[in-house]
Length: 538
Ligand code: KIV
Ligand code: ZN
Image (cartoon, rainbow, N blue to C red):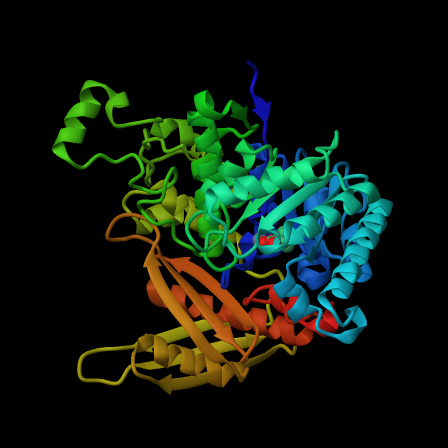
């Protein structure tokens, strides 16, 4: 019997990016979207255009530059949101507007507390139903492909949920998403919810039902699979499972579960599994979120056999302890070692295999950077290439401040001291400052603070090795705040002081850009729910 197709809706760029500290630049988002197209996802949720000019821009650029998948924009059930989504999608060949509104009593009581939505829960439910229908009608003006989500469907009374779903289908919604927004459902319960809603609205022809599961109880993937077994034919998921709080269902796990257990579920996707590893690395590099070694499918240990009895079994027959092969998901061993003697062909074929796009006009510069790195590092691993590529690509297009020079002195029995020279690129002025601190990084950051004079708190500083060897790249992630919005900065270098300085400058530049950008709403860092949840806003 031929298998049914499950639509893979990737929301790494929207729900994934809502993970605190996971913010990506517009250029990173476009690169990732290209990679998602290559991976074979059916729909890319590219962002939430009304929430900030940066989000609007990211969606617009992805629509213009990425071919293949449907490009989707998120919008609350509000006129200005749908208008912004429609505008961001203009000119796209395959576009979708995804509009949503909360339907559970707890959301209605808290987010729609204002009397203009009604004074009883029944009145509020009627208001929300009308808002949902109006939103779908409005979205249909921009595109025929309209998705509706009943936020917190997992905790919504089923008869009311069915009424809302029937009404939005009548209004023209073609995909119905049933989110378990809080990750509350248990798998059999979520599957039952999907079939009850589908039955409740008479399983209409041409309407796709979708899962959207969060991982608060570690059940996001299991619940999504339960949903498709119950009849859903779209799964919303993110690479590496990143997303709000504990994250979303991990795309790579869903896809490989459907793939490996096709005998059981008889379902297929359009994903090219060999691209999974490269996509996972790209997301980890862009967000600064490491992938845990024991992570299913894409973790470094996912195919490593340690126990002697396992090693012996695998040598005799791989199927004894392996249900899929490392190479099936792109976890191939590096066959050719790259180093200072490697030529252009070796480098560019490796970059191609890793899914790192290089335009012909960039080749000479990239090769030069590779040779410079090979002079500093004995052996170049795939992880170095990801980092080098990322490091070169993610500098802000229009930074306000540029760190022209720094010098740090540190030694036993002396207080660390740092000197910096920072250029203000708007006013073309140069500030030179000196400071001492509890350690070299503290001294460096104090000196930069004196030079830049942007009031803020350092919320988090972390450093990790992102490639192999004693001369590995160190990646630094910095989070600074203003008592609300958070600004992330990251940078990598084989010199960790240099990486620390650059990451801090990147965070300061985002903060400075935010200060200048009067149209931005409180979006950054702690998630778009801030923007959703204000009752006066709804
Ligand atoms: O979790 C959720 O409910 C969402 C909606 C916006 C679909 O992300
Ligand atoms: Zn979500």
